[in-house]
Structure formats: structure tokens, C-alpha cells
Image (cartoon, rainbow, N blue to C red; front, side):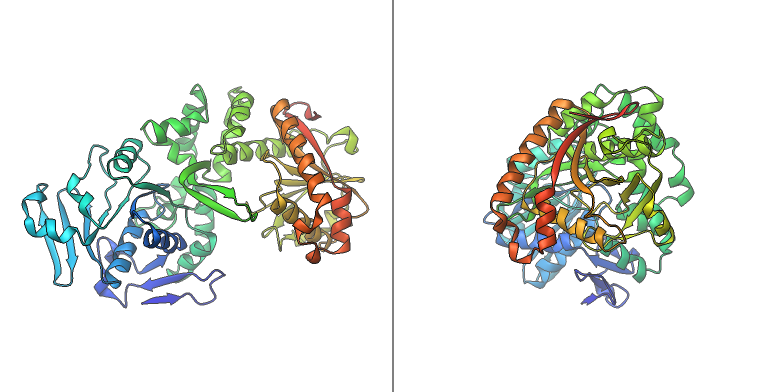
Length: 499
């Protein structure tokens, strides 16, 4: 049933060809040709299979495939011999068992002794994302396992998790690999997909959905501008995200912010996700840029709000992206000079770093600009994590971070990988001083991060084996030894001010 997409990037992306398996036309899947088996579906089923109390409220950004996930969970449970009560609407449900499929209508199912007996050995899947006042009866608590897929409606989530001792499980949006495979299999125009991705972010419904708006409609900024202006007029821009998600507002925040599980680093310095907690980022760079532009046009000072947002791991990704854009605009549009300690003067050229942190390339058609100084390098991908931009002057190479997160072994290793990759792109970096710069809008916040990072850096230098020293070249060790860390406060009129 599952197939591997030809030439699909790693990790392998699996899919089901529904044209060849018409018997799987469950719910709305008869409208689709290809069913992409998201890695998120696989990970959730692994968690559900090992849970001692398998009761989950699976949620996340609207339009990323939670309903499709419910159908996949149904497939998986049925294939493993489980019976399932599937509730796609509030007034009826489907009961799948070895005897076939039974349709039961009405709300008062407790009158059915046969159903009461069956549910004790069955799973219940609820795929209802409609009116917030809907809530299933207590009879489902007899089920062997419960899964409700829904947008993050706070009252519903709180009631369900409390009533049935269920756990929230925040789902990530589609990966770029999954989007690429879907584009190829459905013969979508790659340029159209990229244009939609740049505006709406990795939201499958906006990119591939049958009712997806025309690209011209998506490109019209009037709607998103109105939502951003409303958020900026709010007493706290970042609380706009919280209030819509936590206090059941009008959900307009879903048009600005991307809801994801919170990413953390475990003791082995590997990334993992806290599925019970969400974080907020901007849906796309386009929306983040519009936010900064509108804030400037309306004279809205968001620096205080940024400082508060950086204190929250939940809001830090969105805050970091705003500061990154503010830095870029200050250098490239307002022509504010680089810090005097780095040589001063306005940036003379900007190049994109194309690819991820391990294998990026400089723009090939402008390599002659590599000798321009100061030179501003900006990652095209968001997968650079520890570096938002790189400033190169005649004397200094300066990786810039706007995330204001403290360092760990992973961060240092990633930074060394980026430096090694720069050296293979016709840039003589080892003749330059190496200064890692944290940039924020609140001096106290920046000072604290720089102090903590310098302490961690000293500890790492004292114990280089934590970096798997056998894999580090002598050049890497030299770069690590000369690395300095400094902090700057961004003033959009004066530039970067040392702390």
C-alpha cells in the first residue's frame, strides 16, 4: 500500500496512490489522488502505541493535515486488528469491526448495549473541528484509546484533557521534503508552490487544497495587512497570539503565527519536541517583513514587547525573526553603518547562502562581490538555527544571532560547520577576527545572554572532548580558540550599539 516517492530526498517520504486503492476512499480522501504519509503521523502512532493511557488531543496549525491524520490513524488501527469508532461529525459515527462497518446516528448511544460492550475493546477517533461548544459524551471514556484531532481550541482542549486524562500532542507542519514530493506526484507547478510557500508558509491547505485561493489573491496584502494592523494596535502584539489561542479569540492569529511543538535540547545535545507545549513563529518571512514594515509606518515601538517575548521560549522564535528582519532593514535599506569596532561604513553587497547550514553555497552569479567589504551574508533557508546572518568586514567575520538563546555543544558544533563551509566558498575567513554577535532590543537581556554564553564557551574550551574532538580538525580547534562573543542593542536609527 505504501510507496516510496522516486528520487525523494531523505528522509524517505511515503505515500499512498489512492487511484490504485479506491477502497481507501474514506471521509474526504476520494477527492485526492495522493495521500502523503507525513512523518508526524508515524511519530504520533509510535507515541500512541507505547502510551500507558492512550488518550490524546492532537492539535496544531489549521490546514496542516490533522483530518488526514485521523484517516491515517484509522488505517493503521484497522490494519493492526483494532476495532474503531470514527466520529467525523457530531450527529453520527462509524463503527469499524471485523463484521464490517456500522453507521450509528444520534447522540444517545448509551442506550445501545451492543455499543457499550464493543467500545471497551475499541479505539475512538474524533475528527471534529467545528463549533467549539461540541463535546462528546462520557461514554467514550470506556474506549481502549482516544484520539481527537482539532485546531487548538483552548476550552475544548482543556475540557477534553481534564475530563479524560488526555495529553495534548502538537503537530508540526509539512517538511520541505514532503511538500516537494506532493508537488511532484500531483504534477503541481513548482514555481506556483514556491510562491505560495513564501507567502503562506508550509500550510498544505493553502498550497494544495482544492479550495486554495488563487495566487493573485494570496499576493494581495490588504487582508493580511489588516490583521497585522489590528495586532499592532493591540496592547501587546505577541499576546495577540496567546489570546487567540489560549482565550478563544477570533483565530486571526493563525493568519500570522505558525503554531508548532516547542523544540528543546536534551542532555545528549540532540533536538527534540515537547509535544504538550506549543511555540509561535511567523508563518512566513513575507508576513514577518510586513509586520516590521507596518510597525515602522505606524510608529509602533515593539522593542519592549520583544524583550518580554524573548523571556518566553514559546514566543522566542517569532521575536527572533522580527529582530533579524529589523537588522537586515537597518543595514540594507537604511544604510546604517556597521559598528566602528568592525571598521564602520555601510554594507556594500548582500549575498544569499543557498542551502542548509551543512552544505550551503554562495550565490554563484555574484561571486565577484565576495571581495566587497562590508559584506552581508543572509541564509535563504531558515535551517541555520544558530546564525541569522553573517557580516564580513576587512578585519572581522561576524556571525549574527537574534535568537538570544544560550549556547550548548550543538550550537558550537553547528557554528564550526558553518565556518568550515564558508571557507570552501572562496572566502578567506581565517585571516579575520571571529566575533559571534548577539543582537537584541533590550540591553539587559543581551548582556545576560552574552554572560551566560561566555561561561559556557569557557567550559567547552576546557573540555573539548564534549565536541567529539576526534572529529574536529586542527583548523576547527584554532577557530574555537579565537572565537569571541559580544552583544549589541539594535537601534533602527543608529545601528548596532555595543552593550
